[in-house]
Image (cartoon, rainbow, N blue to C red; front, side, top):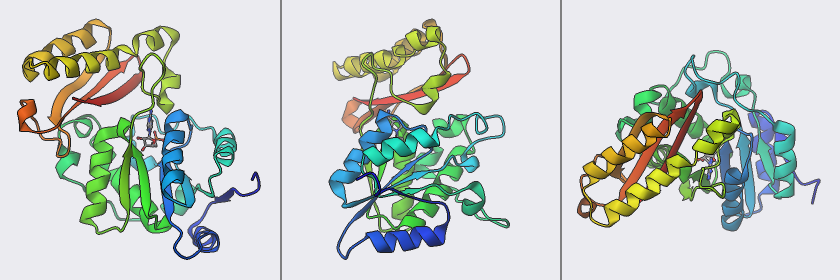
Length: 283
Ligand code: AMP
C-alpha cells in the first residue's frame, strides 16, 4: 500500500485529508514525534494501529520546548528515512508542519502546566520544557482531533503532564502510555543516543541497571532513601553527572517514602559527556 501515505504541511489540507480518509465511526490515533524515528516510536505506531483505523504521525521538532542553550539546531533530523519507515508501517497521514505553520507571526499563547509539571524532576533542569510541550501537544490535539494519542513511558513525566493537560482542558482524547523499548543491553532507545561516543555507549546501559537494582531492593523491603543513595553513588562512579534519581508516586509524581504509600516510579536523568539521558521504571 505504498501510495497511501499523505504528507501534510499546513492546517487546511490536513483537515481536508482527515475528512477524506475518515469514514463515519472510524477512530483516529495520533502519534506525536520529533522525527529521527526508531523502534520506540514504531511501538507507539503499532499500538495506534491496534486501537484505531486511521493513524496520524506528527513529525515536528518543536522549538518552543528547547532552551536557547539546548540542541534544537543540532537535534537529529532524518525526514526521508522517517517517511519510508512510516509508509512501511501503513500510517495514513504524516503531519509535518513548518515552524511558521505551527507558530505563525504574532503567535502569543503558551500554556503554563502545574502539578506533575512542577514535580522537581525534568522541570528543575529544563524549566522551558513542559510549557513548550503542552502548548504544542494541545495544538496537535486540536489540529488532528484524535480519539487516541500515544506517548512513550520513556518520557514518564511528560506522559503524566500531557494526560493531565488533556483532562484539564476537556480535550476529548484518550492519552495512552506505551512501555519503553530498549536495546538488548537495556539502554532505552532515544533519538539522542546518536550523540553518544563508543565509550559512552558502553557505559550508558548502567543507568537502567541501577534503576532495576534499586526497584528490586525496594521491592525486597529495603528503605527507599537508602536504596536511592546507593543508586546515586553507583551512577556517579560509572562516570555520569547525575541530575536526579528519585522515587515518586507513579500518578502524581509527588515524593513518596515507602511502597505502602502508593505505586512507586523511579526516575533518573544523568549526563554522559554532552548527552543527557533519562529513564524510569516501575517498582
Ligand atoms: P520524541 O520524538 O523523542 O519526542 O518522542 C516521541 C514519542 O516517542 C514520545 O511519546 C516518547 O516518549 C516516545 N518514545 C521515545 N523513545 C521511546 C522508547 N524508547 N520507547 C517507547 N517510546 C518512546
